[in-house]
Image (cartoon, rainbow, N blue to C red; front, side):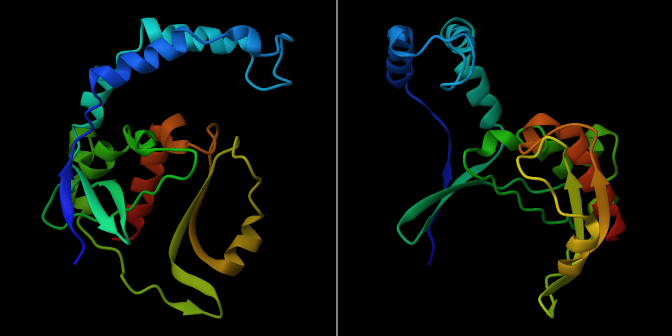
Length: 205
């Protein structure tokens, strides 16, 4: 049986001090300084970014914001998987699963978890989430027949295929072409993503 344990992010002061020291003492002359981005991140941009991290960034503040949600670790095949489980409002909240890619982290979803799990705190209605997903995902001729929503953000790393092609593979019931945002939509445009998910959820009632 998988062991599930509560978990909190708690980075020690010693680790934070060592990171700040390494960043502050980095030998910048080892990076090409061509004034552009040809060899990687622009040197001036990186210096400003590191100065912000050393002098202004408040890790403890962000650590507390991350820990406002219930964190857990589950041992699966010898690996500890870290996840957040935020139970939604109402008597029968709709289950919703987010999985980040690489590179990425749970921080991408900090601005969408609460509005989606507790819409009443943001002017929404709990009843809109009082239904459940159909658990049977029926595959017919390799086409996904469960209702599927697609949110297209213009700065995505790869171009989406035409809707006509996507509909060969999925039962597209909502197709949203966003005005801005990219691959990390939850981080870049949380309000657009939240509203799109809410709209899709209402269609499943």
